[in-house]
Image (cartoon, rainbow over all chains, first blue to last red; front, side, top):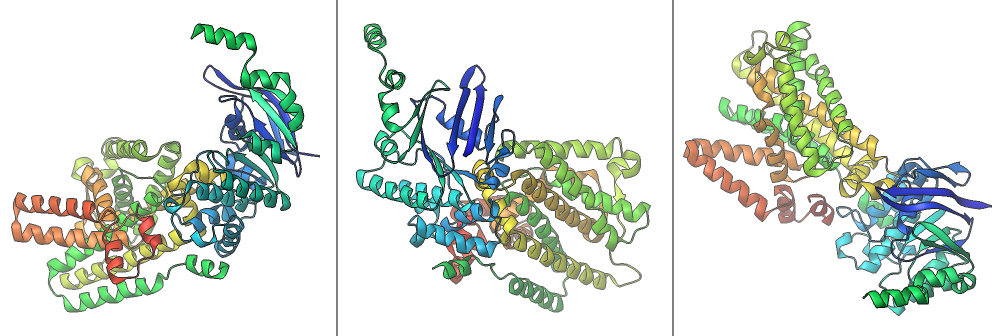
Length: 249
Length: 331
């Protein structure tokens, strides 16, 4: 049964058609990768699913609920959470309080005391327990991504949208991140991840959706997608197009 | 770990602070006989309430540059309720501020998409609009630029000295009340939401916070508290109300006092109002005229550049009981 379903979702900014009828599903328990060249509409899609942007057309359903025109906080409370490509912590709150916001106001709507307890456990889960009372400013970029993850998990997410949480990591950090993803999966969280790093996508995703210019151009297992001529064209260009660019330059 | 963390975020104790303020204020009232000093302190208490109201809005990231709207509307509504309907001033003082509460709600609703300077600009504009409304369409009711006399809060054949003490004690009690209100709010679950909204509205929303209701709630409450300060001021100190209250100065005071004392800290507005105002009065008397203004200006510049987190964090650091939490807040 599909947990998330997007049907003909369209969103434009002025004259720019960022999403032109995107259609796909994410099943409960799946880890799905969302890839595509720069400007393909990946982040716009994440913003549209989470209610930050409202689509002009199409419909988005989560767990049987129509969420297309719901306010972001309502969607979060249903069990959809996200991280941001550029970590955006609450800078005047402590690391612990950052996570508490998610626990207190997300799907679980916990009291402050319970939120503090659960937030501390989540910090332990993502490996930030010793930083609980630091300010976010004192955190490294990797730690900030882990904080984002803890806050998102704290809101009681059943579907987690991860927007490029692996960019710029060293091989060792990537290994740790992969291990964290496996533990996330063990918690039963469904994941839709936007990612540029093919090695991560190939290794952890069961299914991949490829976007280009706001359209879905391919979908399938990592192996299928990697062999798809449309995908190869989108990423590498055709020989003729490449030649034309070279001649033009 | 988890238990320690829970203990750390549990509410800071505010009741002992409130009691200490009441006792200290009471002792001063018992010792000081000089009318002028009592009057300055009464002013401090009233404007600390007003600054606290601004602080509550600021805690949610709504930095108003037109808080005089609420101060003035509260004063007018209360004075009119007491004058025209014959309500006792002590009752009017709490009913009248429902008008600025409503105004706060309306302005917050109109400014929902605005932040920072843009929010400030619009709130600033509203003060001018409200002033014109009070003078023109409602001029018959408000006696236009001449204004209205305000019924005294404490009267009935008492000696002037007694009235001064009663005014002082009322202002003290209400200031402590507004402190408890702000402190409880900031340490509550709603306070956490307001702080999250202050930091980043989009992330707050996708974390499940209803940004809209929290912003409206903060401004409504802020409008009410500012209105009480305005009403108290006109029923005790000024005993008169005129459209001059919607001037720029009265919108600047709460910013000045709160930032000097400690932004987004419940103790901040109180300490700031006390220190700045007492220093101000001293400078006026000791130096006189424009020389005092130069010194005051310099002193404020020194406070803001040297202790950008405010006097409260400075004092707390010196006493060794400031957590990193407070220092973070005051940004």
